Image 1 (cartoon, helix red, strand yellow):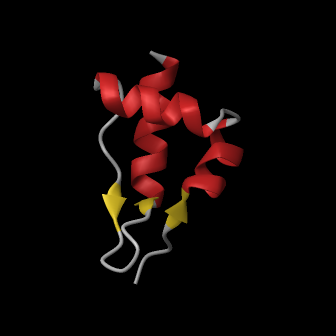
Image 2 (spheres, rainbow, N blue to C red):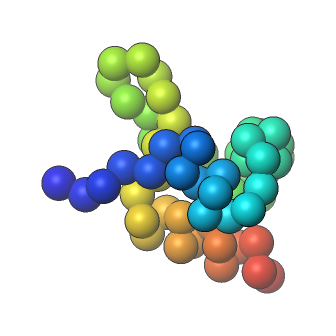
Image 3 (tube, rainbow, N blue to C red):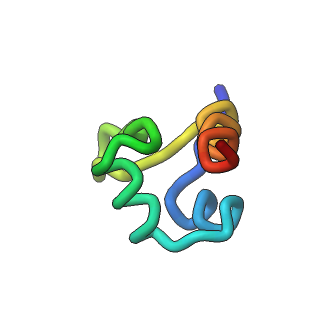
Length: 58
């Protein structure tokens, strides 16, 4: 099973705030996060975070 990166993890990895991530999702700049069945928390897999990093560089 792959490691799940939650909002706090992704904030630190990208060096941005959660508001940035919410805005980028809302405007379609980055793909929407997956959600946990219990609690509906956002999470990303490693390849998702890498894809977001690449999108932000472009």
